[in-house]
Image 1 (tube, rainbow, N blue to C red):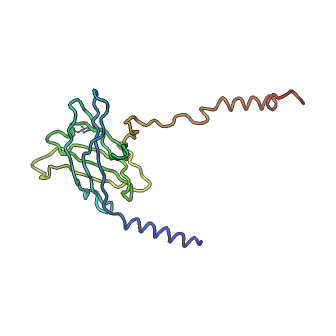
Image 2 (image 1 turned 180 degrees about the horizontal axis):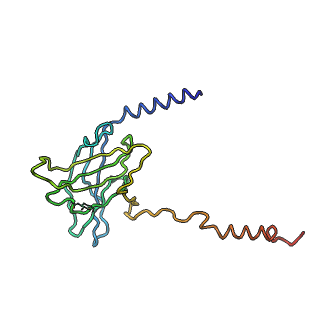
Image 3 (image 1 turned 180 degrees about the vertical axis):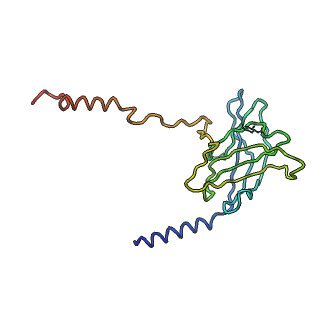
Length: 200
Ligand SMILES: *[C@@H]1O[C@H](CO)[C@@H](O)[C@H](O)[C@H]1NC(C)=O
């Protein structure tokens, strides 16, 4: 196969994926973090409809359910959740329940990958309602498309395992773990090939 035909094939693929950038929906859930109870299952908060070919502010809150939070919950986890698989499918952020207080309108900010097929992270913030300036008191959504080759650095969300524990990356390198083995090999080499039967 000629390089040029591979290249044009790739170009066609890229165009196809651009053309199929269409409407998508993300299910945003919240999980109250309460001190007394074992962590409850995440509950649906909102469905956000977005189109990565449109401007960020064109995201739309397709549905929204004001959450009923336990009294002693001070914080909630926010993220995109798959209830069938029982796991978060985006990074998760933490917000204070005060963000749902009266006088604030909850604003959900999603960051998605370039073609919008994956939600990378979700955050929630309560924006103070200024009755003089806005007539739209309902929940708002903002979808930020991540440019290729760039990762969001500020406010980097924490990745959680399905149980909600913070995922700890593998800590020790092979060298750290097997230094003693390397030491033995070096010693054996220096002492003349394995300390076998003592022959010459
Ligand atoms: C929303 O939650 C964030 C994170 O906990 C907090 O810093 C912020 O003050 C909260 N905003 C409101 C309006 O309560």
